[in-house]
Length: 228
Image (cartoon, rainbow, N blue to C red; front, side, top):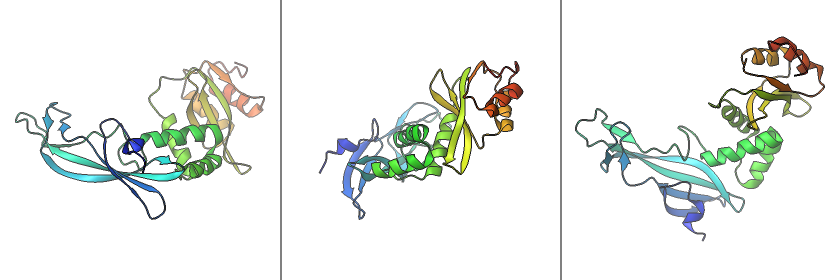
């Protein structure tokens, strides 16, 4: 059997045991550190109020699916002057609230979705042992694009294939940071122009020779210069 450290999902997480599943995958049973720190007063507590399990898809092992069963405790704050009675372990470094996958597994899906598109990324994720639908991959990609990064100034506009030869959208990329800014539902002049109007920080637009995006720049940018 492989070392438990092989599946260590994050700093401070203690792997208790690893077991095979009926479908030839792996279950990794892990827990957060013994004791939590109150987010209000900063005092540490070891008085457990309760616990729950989070079931998360994580990195695979030799192409086989790995499910992380993470025990997350709820603690009582023992500082008498603190207004908070209980608090949970801070597991946001492992997965965002209500997520079904670890953050690092989502990052792989975003990278593949960005590089290949929905359907090819779905096939690759299945081969890697992290099955995920194309809709889920694209949803993670859009959530990542809606982050808190500074406004883009130099962007690229291009077609985006939701489904090849059937449905297309528009992908907007920050060329300075090499990251996706947004994915529009279609590739119409109206939707691209509306997005440009809402983002006045844009100074340079890179596009192909498609007249659609040239028209969108004329309508959506204050200068109306499609060649910039």
